[in-house]
Image 1 (cartoon, rainbow, N blue to C red):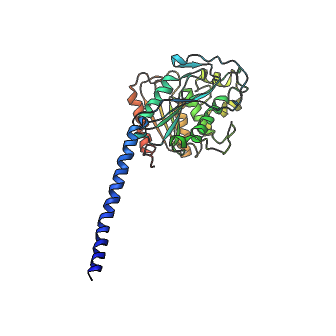
Image 2: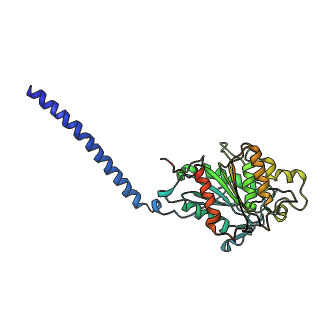
Image 3: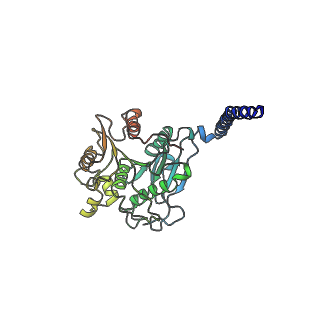
Length: 331
């Protein structure tokens, strides 16, 4: 009888003690994990920017042999881009959401406002836990392109392909990759969002080229001469483009139910890119049943230089948050 009681007592204490031991082991493991993370600077601080050739070691499509005459990188206004690159900005691990955005700076297809509409915006997104891919896309030019009109779209599609292809390496969600474009970069982003089902690049593995969401800031949308920014149209399509080319790159004509959810921002007093561009796209999205939100500012002109940054950037984060794009990535 006493032997039975001893056995029961031992089992009783084992039931009480073992969970406590297991819990202590888990607590120790969590503390050790936290110490390991604390030793990793990338846990608290964003890692350094990385720059990659957009097409890697492969040949650049639709490209002619030409000397590299790029200028202006030190001034933030880059011209004569014939060699496309993509810059990768990652957030600190402690605040990473798993969401990323591909950024297309503007510049009327004559150059790239690379610092203000590229690098500075990337740092803003990174600060909010969003990875950013800034695209140095080719400037349309007959000297280094066979068909200058299609070159920027090829680079935009390749940038989206790059972001999804490498998402796993940086713990990013390939199903939460958006696009944002400014001015002519807004035209390029909207072209990507309305022509993703018309690949202009080789795409082994059929990687999805459609942005999951779209943000357009004072964008050029149409190539209609009555509304478009004529310098952008001339740079992209030439002096006398065909009706077919005008229609192909008038993106309001290609909106359908598969066009990504979109946020539009524009100043009514924009003297360079008429706000009618945004209104055309807004109307097309509405009729196609695509979720869309628009913020029109009474004053701000082109570039929003007359508006405090938080006044136009905060609505972007609010829109992303309200649509679930900033929900923390679950590991």
